[in-house]
Length: 239
Image (cartoon, one colour):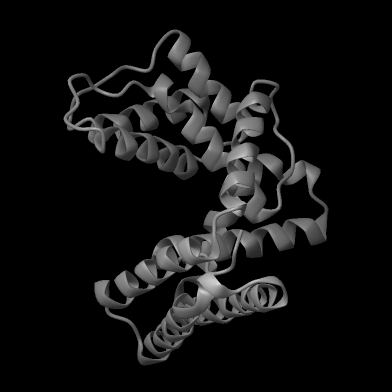
């Protein structure tokens, strides 16, 4: 998207999040959002950042004023940083991203210190919702059920795990994440080409800096991320 279209599309998305109340992206706000486009923030990633801010704001109670795009920048840059790590793109393309990236890295380090029991609680909740919320093929449903059984087993003893026992549990979560992701890819095998095209479109602003192998790896990582997003699949491994 060119910057003007990018801004107009995000303006429409924010209007929907504001219950139809239109807040124009003009002046300094236009320059700010154009900066996101210049950095290469994919449109869907920016939307997720806006959604995060709106959800957190709504949790505080009824809103008296509509959300402005300027309020969403920290969440947008945080989502962008997560996306970059997920697909293997390093560095920001604009100086203005550095402060946001530093803040996002701090958030990521905090997330990595999340306790094992809390992590397992979230994973179990997401897996349970996934199994109950949509029609799954028998093979994928079996993979989800098996993963949920393992996660529930770990939850029962997670608070007592220390040292090597905890490291072994974390390693098993990483392996389990790969197994479930492989099953999820198989579930969406018919959409593989479309997902790859979508991943390539998101990565296009970074194409010039990526060699052939790095580009291919980034596409595959992008497909993995889109598969998770499409199915609502949690990251089972610890961050």
